[in-house]
Length: 89
Image (cartoon, helix red, strand yellow):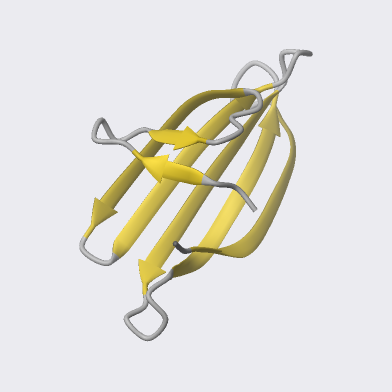
């Protein structure tokens, strides 16, 4: 679990940012997009992209996310992983 807050400049502030090098979010109606990039000490990057929809039933955003591991650019992909997640208070 990660603790974070959304900032007015459409970036995300994490309680423990780790190797975070950039972050972005967009809220459009009930749709939330989150994108973060982490740069490891080796120089390898991890890009996380999440696409979520708000549920009035439980008050959470739920949806899918993907991780991409790459070195120089995203066309140089080492591995990918997809899953589901929720964003809640």
